[in-house]
Each structure stands twice: as structure tokens, then as C-alpha cells.
Image (cartoon, rainbow, N blue to C red):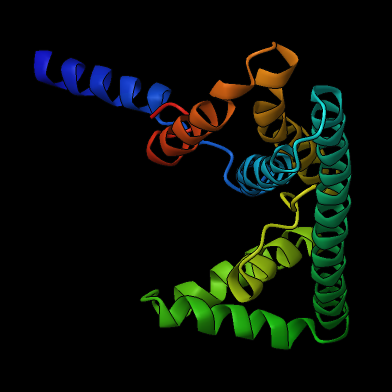
Length: 207
């Protein structure tokens, strides 16, 4: 009896702690690219300007201008890219939706064949496919996952990608400007180099 209770407790604990991160939200990739692009591009821009022996004010204005231009450019690019990808996915979902409406028996047989190929007994596979095909939206979701490898309810958001890219680029581009804003321009390249090395070696999220 004690063994059964112990196993049940362990199972309950495992279930409570068994969570996953959001890996399909579309924010991590643009954030990483934006931060590194902002750091490298603005550091290179300001290095060239400083090499021209211009005034301190000109260096700061150039850095802030590079930050603003790059952040808006990255945000617009990410929004357009993710929006285009989302439209393509939605177009493919419309094709699958029409097929389910015009040829439900063929799509049900296709789903059953897929389960059979994965080791399910043919009779059971046909029964499962029949039950899952009763709800059109559920059938569309299953076909999208099995055939297209996507989840219709978890498509990446263009707005999230754009905001993530904008914020990360601005943060990365601010680092080379910050020493000039604080009146310590000599520590700029050294601080940016150390931050770049650490950002590539340390995870951005807890394990």
C-alpha cells in the first residue's frame, strides 16, 4: 500500500513539474538576431565615426540615429517576413479545409493510412480516423499537424516578432552609445566585446 502511494505521489509531482517553454511564439529568433545585429552594426558605425575625429555630440547623435533606423528596419522586416509566412500557412490550411469538405472519405482514409504506417492496427486506425473526422475543425487541426507539421492554433505572431526584434535591436545598439552618454567613451569597445562574448556563451533563459 505504501509503495502504491509513493508511486502515485511521484507521478503527481512529475505531472505538476512537467511544463514546456513556448517554442513557437516567434519571439526568440528575432530577439537574438536583433540584439546581436544592433550591437555589431552600431558599434561598427560609431567606430567609423569616431575614427573621423568628430565631436562628442556628433558621435552620440550618430549612435542614436543608427539605433532608431536599425530598430525600425528590423521590426518592419520581421513583421513582413512573419506575416508572409503566416499567410502562406493559412493558404495551405484553406486548401486542406476544402479537401476535407469535398472529399471527406478520402481524407479519412489518408489519416487512417498514416496511423497504420506508425504501427496502429488497421481496424483501430480506421476507427480512430472516423471518430476524429466527425468534427471538421478537429479534423483540420489533425491533418495540419500530420501533413504540414504546423499547429493552426499556435502560428507565430508578426506583431510579437516585430516588437521583439525592435526591442532587442535597440538594447544591443544602445550599448556602444551608452559609454558616450555617460562620458566614458574609452570603455565602449571593451564593454561591448565582453558583452558579446558572454551573450554567446550564456543561455538567455533559465534551464
